[in-house]
Amino acid sequence: MAARKPKPRLSRERIVAAALARLETEGAEALSMRKLAAELGVDPMSIYYHLPDKQALLLAVFDLVLAELPLPDPALPWRDALRAVGRQFHRLAIAHPRVFPLLIASPYGTPREAQVHQALRDLLLRAGFRAEDCARVTQAIYTYAVGVARTAAHGLRLKPFYEPGAPPPPPGPPMTADEVDFSIELMIAGIGAVLERTQGKG
Image (cartoon, rainbow, N blue to C red; front, side):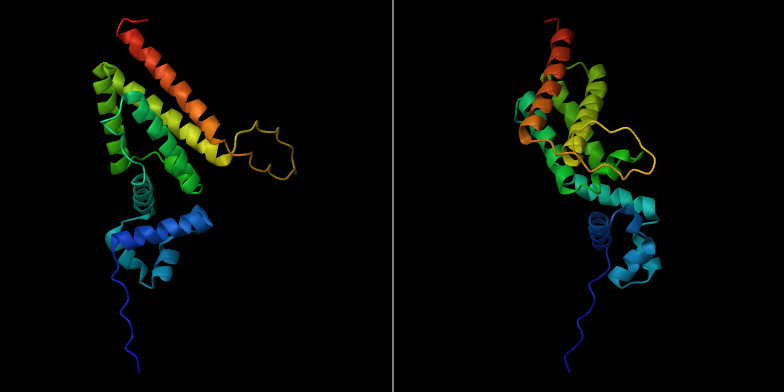
């Protein structure tokens, strides 16, 4: 009789990876500690040992997804670094279409999100932005990049007027790579104009 293989040791990483997979295949409504425990073959209380509640679990999933977003390359000129960040946000939204909207709607930040913000602020300081402007410009970059990425993933179209009883409209066509790049260039042009103005060049 063959020896039974021992179950993989339960860890925070294993729990978060399983939660991410469930979110991506079934959506947020299918995620619960009880269902996750059944999938992992453990008692639900053992999950709480690693993550205190569902909110903590979601934030851990968001951090895992954001780990796929490379930090701006300090060796690149700031415009090229921001282009790369914008394109990576787009790829992230395409890769995780069910998780990305939850991530950007969450009122709570994650450690990786803080790293991204700090890297963007450092990039702007090196580019010559005033320290007092960096937080506002960073927030604008993040908001703009997230908006472009979400639109790219879920379609660019005008919303139809609501009609009672009508079925929900289908998603619009996704943005093309050229449309994403065009939006990123608009963002960079606006940021460049702010920099020129603060340096007295415009």
